[in-house]
Amino acid sequence: MDASSAADARQGHPISPEVWDKREMREALAGREISAVYRNLRKEGISQRQIAALTGQSQSEVSEILKGRQVMAYDVLARIADGLGVPRGYMGLAYDEATEIQVVGAADEQQAEEDESVKRRNFLAHAAQVTMGAAVFGSSPQAWGANPARTPAPGHIGMTDVRQVEAATRALRALDYQYGGGFCRDAVVAQLSWGQQMLDSSATSPVKSRLFVALADLHSLAGWTSFDTGLMDSARGHFANALELAKQGNNDPLVANILYRMGRVYLHQEAPNDALKLFQLGQIAAQESGSELAIAVLAANQAWAYAMMENEDQALKLLGLAKDEFARANLAEAEDWVKFFNETDVYAMIGTVHTVLARNVDLKHTKYAIPALTRAVDSYGEDMQRSKTFNLSALATNHLLEGDIDHGARVGRAALDAADGLKSARVRDRMVPLREEADRRRNNPDARDLADRLGTFFAA
Image 1: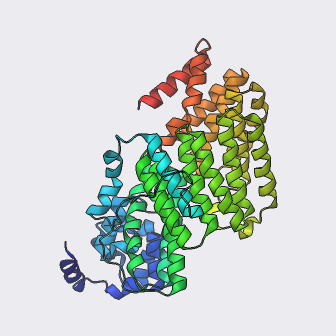
Image 2 (image 1 turned 45 degrees about the horizontal axis):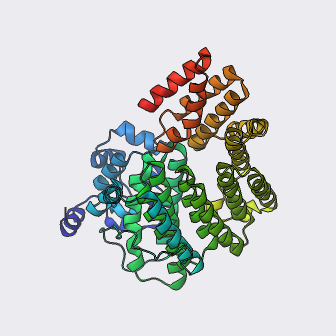
Image 3 (image 1 turned 180 degrees about the horizontal axis):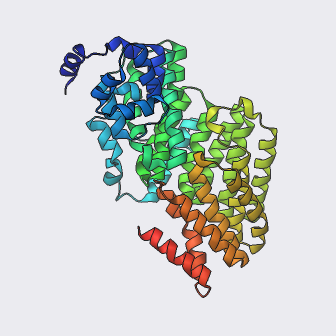
C-alpha cells in the first residue's frame, strides 16, 4: 500500500489519526506497551469489541492484554498497528524493502569473501579516526552502509520524538538481554529505519544533539544484536555508525561503550590483540568522560584480552583496576548505557578472566573463578537469562577442571536448560570450552552424559 492509499484508508477509520499523536499514546506506542495503548483507546470511547474486530483478536485476548499481558511477537505487533491504523514508525515497525535487506544481512553475504583480519584493521582505523581524529592504524574510513528507512518521518521533531526512540531502545534492549538478539534484531533494525530519517527533520540544537546520542545507542544495540546472531559484518557497520553519531553528540561515555562492545566482538573471534586496541581506545574516551564505571568496564575487558593472550600479570593488574574503579563509581549518576555493569557483572568478569587463565595458564585460577561465577549466577534474574547461561557454562567448566566432575556435570546440565529458548548464536560458542572439557573426560559416565547432551545441543 503506498502512502496516499494508506492515508485514504485511514480517513474512514473509526479511530481518528489525531489519537496517535497524543503524548501519552505516543509514549505507549514507542515502548510497545500494548496494554497502555488499549487502555488509552478505551478512554477515547473505542470498545473492546471494536479493538478485537480491528486487530483480528478475540475479545478474551483483548481483555488479557488490557489486564497487562505483554505482546512481543513482531508479526502480532505489526497486525495490531495495521489494524488500528497506527503509523508503523510510531512502534518502530517501519519494515520496508530497505529494512528487510538489513535484517537478512545482505551486507554479510556481499562481504563474506573479504579476509576477516582486513575487516578488523579497517574498523580499527575508523574507530581511531572517530575517537582520536587521526587514522592511527593506517587506513582511511570507509562507507558503512546506506541508511535504510523509507517510511516518512515528521518534518519537525521535538524532545518527545527523541524520547520515543530512547524508550523503544530500552524496551528492545531488555528483550535482547532476556531472550537473545535473534528475538528482536529485526525490530531493532526496523526502529532504526524510522529513527535515521529524523536526522533530516528540522529541530532545535539541543534536540538534534540528543537525537545523535539516541540513534548512536540504537545503532549500538543493532550492532550487539547482529553480533549475537552471528552477523559480524552487519555488527561492524552498525557500531561504526554508532561511533560517528556518539561523537557528533559529544558523548564520550557512549563512545567508550561502543568501543567496548566492538572489542567484545573481536574477543569472541579470538582476536585479543585487536580487541585490546579497541578497549584501549575506549579507555581514553572513558577517562575523558570522567566516568569511573566506564573505566571499570574497559579495564575488565582489557583483563579478559590479556588473559586470552596468556599474560597473567597484566590480566590481574587490569582486573584490580576494574574492581577499584567500580568501587569508586557513583552508580546512581552513571549514564544509562553503563548501568548494566553492576556488582553481578563485576563478579561475572572476575570469574570469566580467571576461567580463561585456568584453562590457558594455571589451574590454580579455578579457586578464584568458582566463587565469583557462583555469586554471579545466584544474582542473575530471568531478565538476564543469556548472561546467566554464559556464567553457568563457565562455572561448569571450572568444576570439571578441578576434577569435581559430578558437580560440573550438574551445573553443565543447568546451563543447557537455561539456554533453552534463547535465540543467540553466542550461547553455543561460549559453551565450546565446556564441551571440550567434557569430551576430555568421557571415561567418566557423568562427563560422558554431559558431552553427549552438549553434542545434541550443538547439532540442533
